Structures are given as C-alpha cells and as structure tokens.
Amino acid sequence: MSSTELPETLAALPRVSTVRVADGERLRTVALPGLSLHVRSRPPTRTGLPRALYVHGLGGSSQNWSDLMPLLADVVDGEAVDLPGFGDSPPPGDRNYSITAHARAVIRLLDARGHGAVHLLGNSMGGAVTTRIAAARPDLVRTLTLVSPALPEIRVQRDALPTALLAVPGVAALFGRMTREWTAEQRTRGVLALCYGDPGRVSEEALRHAVQEMERRQSLPYFWEAMTRSARGIVDAYTLGGQQGLWRQAERVLAPTLLVYGGRDRLVGYRMARKASAAFRDSRLLTLPDAGHVAMMEYPEAVAEAARSLIRESDGATGDAGATAGEMTDETNDRAGRSDGRGGALVRDDGDDGDNDSGGS
Image 1 (cartoon, rainbow, N blue to C red):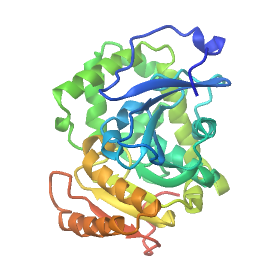
Image 2: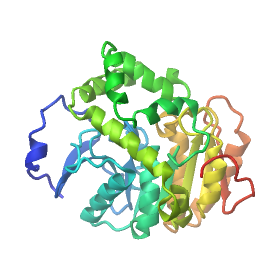
Image 3: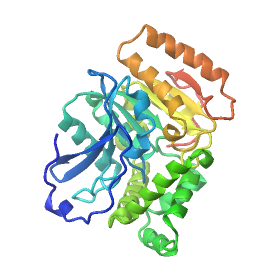
Image 4: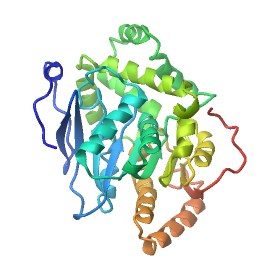
C-alpha cells in the first residue's frame, strides 16, 4: 500500500531528523485508519520468495533487523516494521501500547498487505507480540522465530526490574529528571551494556549510528510515553491468566517455531529456553552461550543459519534442506562450548522432558 496523507492528529507531530537507512534498504509508510506504520525492506535476491516480517522489541525499531535481513534475502522477501510509537512510526491514535494492541497493529498490516501467511520473526517484546499473533491468527504465520521472547517468568532477571518499574506511574518522569544531564552516548552505552552479551563487539561505526538514533528518539515528544506504556503492556500481559496468558497461547501455536536464547541475556532468563521449547509444540532450540538479548544483532550469521533451515523445511524443501538441518545440528552441538558465541546448540524439541520448573507461569 502506498503512502497517503496522515490523520490530522499524527500529521501535527513535529519533524525530527531522518531515520538512518542502510545501503540496499528502503523505507515506506503504510497508512491505515488511525494508524501509520513505517516498514523497512530490502529487495530479495530473486522474485517469488515467501514473505517474512520482522518485529522488534521494547525501545527498538526495524533497524534491529538490518544485520539479519540481508542474510535471509535468499530465502525470504523480508520487511521489518516499526511498531506504533517506535522507530519512525508515530504513536497510535488511541495511545494503546498493550501487547494485544501491538499484535493488532501487526495483524492489520499483514491483512492490508494481502500476502497471506508469512514467516514471522520477533525479538523480546516483539516475541510476545508475534506469539499472540500466531495463536490468534494461525492463517497468517508460516513459521515463527523468537529471539529472547518476553514470556512470563516467576524469577524475573534482576537487570529487567528497572524496565518493569517504568510501568509504575511517575517513575518515567522521575527517571527523566534524574538522568537529564546524560548524553545520548551515555544512554546508548547503557543500553548496549544491558542488551549485548559483549558490548565490545559493537563497532565504532555502529556505536555512532546508535548514538545518532538515540538523539533522534529523545527529540520525539512521545518517546517516554511509548516506552512506559509498552513496558506497562508487558507487565500486564505477564499477569494475564486463562486463555489470554502468553504461555497458554504459546501452547496453541501451530507454526513450526525456532527459539533463540542467549547465555548472557540479562533481560530474559536463559533458563526459560527449556520451558519455551516444551510449550511450543513444534519447536527447535538454538542456544548461543555468549549472546545477550539481541542475538540477531550480535550473531546474525548463527541466527540466519537456523532460521534458513526452518524456513526451507517449512516450505517443503525436504531434500537438501533436511540434510542441511542435520549437518547444522551435529556441527553446532560439537561447537557448543566455544567462547566466541557462534557455537550454539541447535536441537529439535517436540515434547516436554518433564523439567518445567525453571520459571514462568
């Protein structure tokens, strides 16, 4: 769908510096009633490939997938969306940032595009959003790849508590006053230290781009609103029970699922990998011992290798793709102890092994 004039309430927002677009990428706007979403894409290596959609986490944007997207351009025609209020997407008209509202926005985008079922990839909060989509609209999801999905934990990671506190009314304003002297670089380095297993892997160029993006975001009048209300949405989703509970919805997902967990993740517990692999009925588990919360940015090659295997398998390439999957399982298990983070173990897990006490609800 081509760009159209934005609703009056969104058009009135002040202009800020432009979002960075990497070589080979393009940005466009999809305008829906009461909602405007920015989408990042790059041309696939050939025509006729199945579609994929990438969904970022809290505080992130479509740029979080810029390293992974070109690595999968040979198997999918991919797009990455800026969720409402993040990246270059303006806030939703109703100011609803719940997990359900984010999921509804992505569903509206998929329905508007009219491509049918896609390969859906989500990180952190985006993992919770895409899990909800896969459970509610299985017709829209061919496969599901979840990188450190934000699913409920009983023993929440200590470093995740400040994010949860953003959901408390007044805390964001207090934090803003306490940190107003921080530079964009200081804030960026703090985020990288929290999200990366080894922040030293970030190049000077990537750090410079991240600082520029932080400066841009901080100039947006709705920056803290999007952060705090989305954080509140995550907390609220964690407390839901019954059929709306995220773990219950995970059990209803029919799509083949790849789960990616980092051993140095300070926001989503590495111990949750076992519970997740038991909850998703048709799951594969990739563990990356040295990765943090954003494995697709830290170790995009390893994530791409596993995602490519899942995509090819689901699309019916049972010959070469099956051999590739088997070779990858053996190789990655052999390398599981390597300290460079590339030696993650990829295993197929189709059932519960009985150990389900590692957290969650």
